[in-house]
Length: 313
Image 1 (spheres, rainbow, N blue to C red):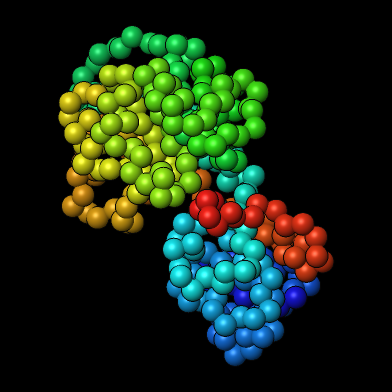
Image 2: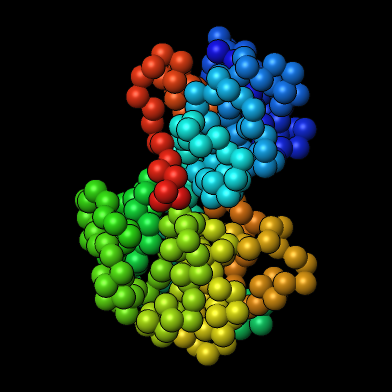
């Protein structure tokens, strides 16, 4: 099987992915983008990570486009993406576990006032705050895909009352109250002390984290955005923090990355900035997932984690 690897890699990243994929599927012939362009009719699959627009044009034998990233919004925004070729997103158990751990860390830090203590340390202020129990700190997780379900499961296991929301319904997670639809979302927001966003980015979810949503949360709530920067209306977040509607925000994703040096988020005392590291892809586990799907495509077997393009995920 001839497979092209293309993406937004630096030289070291490209080398690491090539080694991991070759180890996971040594029987394949792995091609660089240049080699694929030289013999386009021989390319049967593509493994991609935000490739430059147009990278997959003119490959008539393509059977599968396998993304190495969980999000596929940038891929779907490419008008040259071959329309009839199955597209699979990455569902990596190691990445899912890491994302759940980040969601738990952020929620614990909000519930136990650890961000407030960090601010007090910078002021040289010794002031114990009232300790709240996990079972009196409701958490609302937006998005009940693999990552959202994993985060909800871990949070519930730590003793938090967890509600998991999806737009159209998802399989139940034990110990988690599952809800779906817009009406249910607006009914759940007033009880959520922490809001964790793990939604896919679509036309319907872009800008969802805005003044209206923040206004529906209880005063002093925390927001944790681990999904996409374009889910968040940045000016509305700053206003909600200034008014006291929100107490703190943990942000791992941004509209422009890297976050510009002059951006107000960097120095804001009520914002914790992470450089898109909530769940980094593990080359070894992701390569094994990709290899399993590639072999299925080669052998005519059912493919896993296919994207429904009309839904955007």
